[in-house]
Length: 344
Image (cartoon, rainbow, N blue to C red; front, side, top):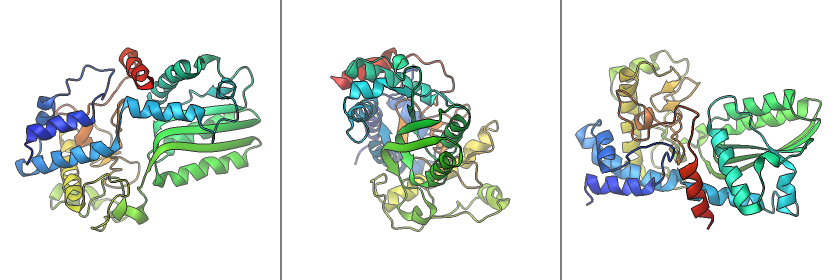
């Protein structure tokens, strides 16, 4: 059976290019330092399940580059000549919060230049009617819908066709996707929306037993856990055991339950140790609803989302496995080198 050091090495291989913009020493010592924050009995099973999860849900530069390069030539999207099509398409930079869209636009700009010889700033012309909204992930869909609805109401032309391109999305975003589509039909404009993604993760309440997110079976037997949910207006929804993720995110019921229990219990600890975390950062990740948290299992080369359990990314005094990007200043030199390598 593999040792903790061997499992740490495997985890490192699964996330080979995390945060290329930062000087993170992602080595065995780093992984084991993070792991030591958990009770001894939990460490090895947790690390083993983390190896399985990251093998299924980590999105490297190579994987994302391949997806975006295929999008640019997709017959489902492109009508005829891809160079002409994208030259007449404007790439939107309208994200109200965060830096993910600008990072993804920088990536798309490099791929456009290397594959089609187009400069992204020259795409769209003076009066475009076709647009792209690109981002790395959609979790609840709230931020994406806010950006698109504001743009449609205040900036979109009378006629527009918008491609929303995402690396990953979740089934639970249907409410906000429907909201965008409904708004497009309500305003006095002719706006068509198409949604494209590399992968879709299951997170609907009705499908919790086969979901692809951390969704615990029960609350930890801890006073702080009971106190946390004591003020909720609605009962917390727990999943039933035995279901398997269709995408193979978890190794099985035992490994999944261990991961969820560790993330949830340590999530309460993180919130105690890091009191400056916003209220909506819950034990299993960001959520504006009164829940235990979103529980995202996704990590991309550019960041770990705050929708993931904070035990994975919170810092000071907690030691993060995946330190989050907290500023918008990004050096793309290493990223571009990896993109070029992926396109060869």
